[in-house]
Length: 274
Length: 274
Image 1 (cartoon, each protein chain N blue to C red):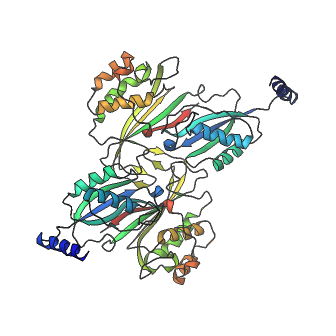
Image 2 (image 1 turned 90 degrees about the vertical axis):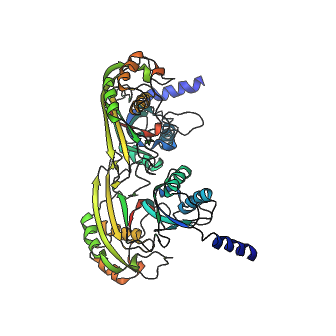
C-alpha cells in the first residue's frame, strides 16, 4: 500500500501538480424521495446520488461539500455544493452531463469554476429558508409534499408579534436540535417575514386554500433550528404559548422550553448568499 | 339466485323504495401515480381507489360516473363524479370520511346531494383544461410532474395565430385519438388562451424558468383531443408546421394530418361548468 501511495505521489508531482479545479454547483431538489442531503448507510441521499453521477463522469471518487445539510423531506431551490476534480471538463459540461444522469427531482441549475479555497458552508454570508403551512380544511393534492397541513384557526398577528425577538444576534440553544455539531449556539437572524397567501398560485393555476408562508434569513443555522422556530411559532399561533413568552424561551437557552419540531416537508432552502 | 333476487325486490318495495340518494363529488388529484381515471385490470386508477373507499364506507358496491375520463398522468383540479347510494350519510360525512381514507394525492374538495337524474358527463355545459409547457433549458424539479419539458425556441405568436381557427363548432376528427367512443366528432371550443409565465410562482416561491400556459374550454372533448391539439400547436411553435396550415388540418378531418399527442403530464382538468 505504501509503495502505491508513493507511486501515486510521483505521478502527482512529475505531472506538475494535479491541475485540480473546483466547481461550484447550485442545486434544486424535491426532497420528498430522499433521506436528506448527507450520505448515510442504507438510505438514498441527494449527496450520494450526485457524487455517484460525478464519479461516473470523472472516474474519480468525488466528494461534495454542501452549504446546508438538509433533512429528509426538505426541499431546495438554491442549495450550493462544491467539489474538486482533476477532470478537465468545463463547468457547462458538468451541468449538462449531470442533468442527463440525475433523476428529475434533482437538478443542477448552475455550475461555475471557483477558487480552490472556496467552501460552500464557511464562505456563505447568509442562507434563506421558506416554510409553508397549509391552513385549508382539505389539503390540495398538489400541496402535501410542500406544506405542513394544519387545518385549525391561527392567530397570525401573535406569530408576527412573537417573531420580532428572533431578529439579531442571539443564543438559539432553545431551538437547537439534538446531535447538532456546532461549536457555538449563537446565530444572527437577518430577516423574518410572515404572510398569508389565499388561493395560492401553482404554476399559473389557482389552488383552493390558504397558505401561511414564513421566510427566515440568517448568517447560519443550528441543526433543526428553522423547524424548531416554526414549531414554536405554531404553538403561539394556536394559542398554546403566549406571544410574550417567546423572548423568555430564547433567553432560557433550553430546548425543552420551546415547541416541537415542525415537519420537514414544509421547508425549502431558498437561497444562499456569498 | 332467482329467489334471492325476488326477496331482494320485496325488501325494496315493502320499505317504500330504496331511499337512494345521489352524491356529487368534486375531486382534485395529482395523476402522476395513477393509470388514469377509469377502472382497468392490473393498474391502480383514481376511480377504483375512490370506489373502494366508498365501498368500505357504505358496504355497497358503489359505481362512480365521472365527467371526464382523464388519461394516466393527467391531473385534475375540478373533476366531477357522482354515485348513487342507499346510505343515509350526509354529503359532509362522505367528504370527511373519504378524505380520511384516500391517499393524499386524491382529495374530495366538495360533496353535495344532487337530483337522481344528474349525470356528471351528460349534464356538463363545458369543461376547461390547462396545458403547461416548460420552455426552460433546465427543468425545475418542482415542474417535471406538471409540464411538458421542451427546451427549444418557440414562436408563440404562430401558436396564437393558428389557434384562432379552433374557436367555434367544428369537426375535430383530426385531433381525435384512436379508440374514441364518441358518436360525433363535432365539438364546440368556447375559449382558447395562450400565455407565457416567466419565473412561475409555485406556492409563494419563485421558480427559475419560463412556462407556456394553454387554456382551452369546450362543450365536450373527444379522446386525446386536448393533447392532440397541443401536440399540433407545438409543431407550429417550433416551425415544423406553418400556422396557416391549421385550418386545412381541421378541414381535412384526418388524424394523420395533425401533430403527435402531447404527453399527459402537462394536462390539468381545471373545472367543469353545469
